[in-house]
Image (cartoon, rainbow, N blue to C red):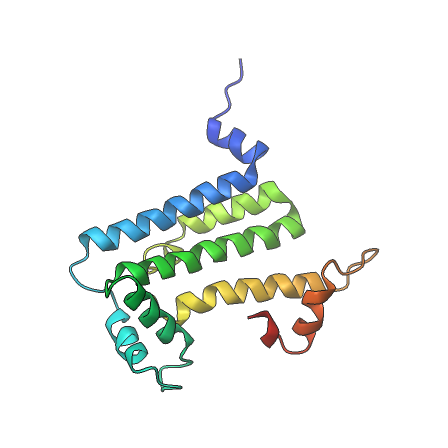
Length: 177
């Protein structure tokens, strides 16, 4: 008698559920671990909050959106780092969703789910994520723009699926963000 693991069966029958379970489990884990066990903010997070607190239009550190969002999340969470950790994990989950959506349109849902599950195992997408900054924020935007580019590419025998996405993407992509 053949035995198939429940995880393999989940991946085969409901790949989107497998992706959401993995992404939300990672997001919850990396929300709880820094909140409970970190004595201070990790990495460059103190400087991100310091620059965001001033709401400057631009610094030598880069565009201000990540700094502003970090400060707003910090303030909305009652001056607690939990808000910044939550914002960071939301960006990571959106990145996984964008990769899954792009992969589904290219190779199918099961293979796209495998790609996301492999990303969950890569340390670059897990360990440094509580350290919110411009790199974590642009991770989600880069994948969304890649997906929009894939939609707008001409495919033989198929009309572009999302005309409202393609026109702004060809005009510079600023309207997508």
